Length: 389
Image 1: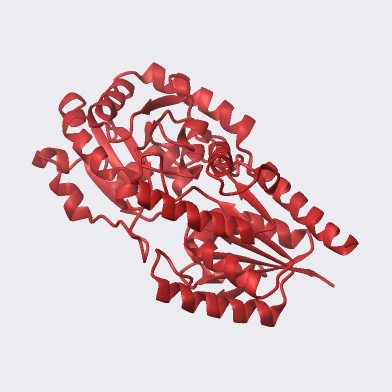
Image 2 (image 1 turned 45 degrees about the horizontal axis):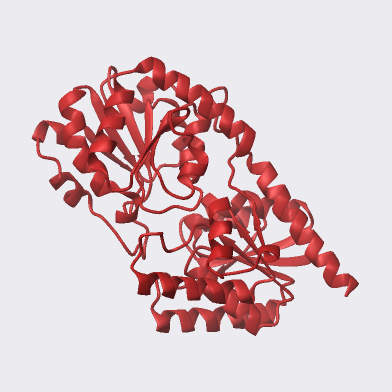
């Protein structure tokens, strides 16, 4: 009889970007794999790959009524299908997944921390609230995975969980797909697609349009950058997901640019499926976030041999080596952000050196197959222990 595992997250775009390879590997390992989240444009991809899909609007944010509804729906589903393992993801959806799994009597409950919902500088009361929520999820779980080693240390320090119950698995990507050898796209094709001149220096960000991603700082920095680098273009890959708690509009961001000529050098590409092609023809990658887990976008950029500018926060600083594979800047420091972009834009040799070092680091530490192998090994171990008991 096949072992049955349910993955829980909020939206199918999260499942596609973060969980798809894990689910395929579990299926190849003999599991019957199911997914519970809100149905979107990626639904058919899961179905085609033999993954059972349950269209459940798992709550985002902390609206108690919405959480009660999704907990009720998930509990009903889990009881009916009798899953052996329930594995929950993302800050809010994991709360519902862990509670529902416990109520339904699931023997193995897993929770992956993709980044805590609080930072070191959060207001005391708000931080304590998030910690209490995380503590609840972890107490309900059999085992907790964390992508960031700093998150594991924080979880223990804040009393969220105990050392023997939490394991750092890191984050990873398909290094064969995100490579110069794999991607044969021509620069002119991408530049023409987005109306970018052939002699431009291309600064790229891949992130949803959210305040948390540091877009306001980035756009304010662009006013200074574009005065100093006349051929620099900013390409924004990402949109506003449904339910995003801190959305930003294109119109608002463009209003932060003081010069009409500068506005013409900013391109909103929206959500793109060919991210590796875009990164292949970019010159610099930037992610000035206020909080992250272990951002996959940075790993993808490093794998594509791009120097990375990021904020000195948990997760990002585990990926970027300051001065070696990129530049780390203080959170919210617009001047430091603009200076970093100007420095790299004016030094092609430094960009190339950092890019090569970034690829080496990605190969050494961020191979997706190893991350998946570690998770499956732990799931197998827990199931075997259940059988012995």
